[in-house]
Image (cartoon, rainbow, N blue to C red; front, side, top):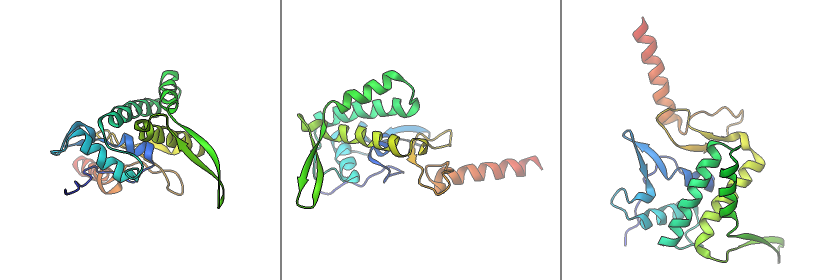
Length: 187
């Protein structure tokens, strides 16, 4: 069976933001990788996301995993939109209740392993845990694209922390072209 390509315009972000980026704007419409677009089923969209995040070898793409992942996506979306929202924090915590980290001793020394009572919560928990790590290390660098027509999120890894666009080649370029057009129209 041929493997479908990931149709999303922005990939490679930390797992939590990559999960948020399973919804994006295309031709003025919000598109959802998990909504069965592009001739894919919803579970095929999940399989694409799991492969893209490197989680496909640990977790299965099935209906239960998809339901839990959609729960995590909504809780993370609310948390990123308003970090002070107490109900959003409670939703993220509810996802985190489904897994834990166990300290271990490995041949290389101290280690950790994640444990899930129900493995179908694994990808959702992994994304929520990643969000906590981002909040712990660089909360001010979790960004939403500055383009009014874009819904993508990114982790600003630029040296000076001033990145504004999900991609300079798309949204950034459009903004520059728009400003240039506005200047030439005024003259």
